[in-house]
Image (tube, rainbow, N blue to C red):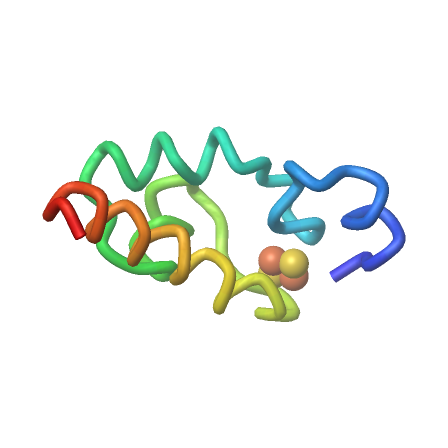
Length: 69
Ligand code: FES
């Protein structure tokens, strides 16, 4: 995780792979149910894994929104 880059670009979620929020949300919308599935869907893998909790929170928010919670 490049924290300086992340601070400068709030929509950049994974600095190791240059994955922005919109790409992650597209993978979630396509049916990915956790961070590992999302990385697979985007054809990459975790490097430092610092972004993993944030990606999992995005997945949980999406699931909660779909369930109306
Ligand atoms: S920020 Fe390092 S793997 Fe995502």
